Image 1 (cartoon, rainbow, N blue to C red):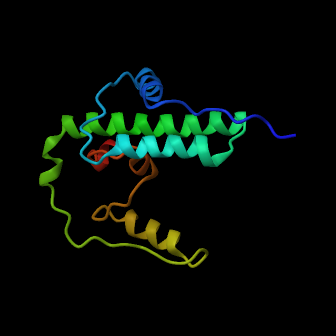
Image 2 (image 1 turned 90 degrees about the vertical axis):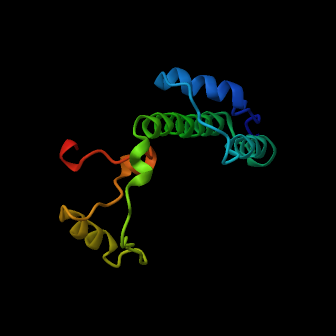
Length: 135
């Protein structure tokens, strides 16, 4: 016997939950059509995912956290609008198959203060990078 399907939530209540979680309330403009995409995601959870109660709670948690990340990112980019003027010259991309040394190369490159890697906290909450000495 399978567990009953449950609901992850609506855009409105997920927004309210994200606002409550971080105290910010500006999701930015919808230039990237994130509201439409979020609606499609929630619709797919309901129609296709066949989530258990635990699965619904987990997806709600993950989706809410993505909205919190958007709030934090929007606030940071508004606080530091000059970030768009910073040139990125000659980026280095480390790619490879698993277990081939890519992590070692990445760590070796980012040990040099002249190079900056993408830290997990910046990947999860995109924002202008603070000066290296502050983190």
